[in-house]
Image (cartoon, rainbow, N blue to C red):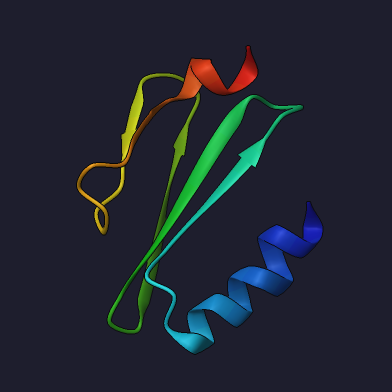
Length: 67
């Protein structure tokens, strides 16, 4: 997971990837990173629905990932 949280995140920010999701099976969480201009922010989800800001039709119920 360190690769996802550190190396890939840094690479994706440098190359302009606007949205990046990290699903952690052990913690049962999804962290969604979004790049807006030069600023990156993240939200941590443990339940509920996540909707992509880039792909309007993409929505995922967090609990469905662990079934």
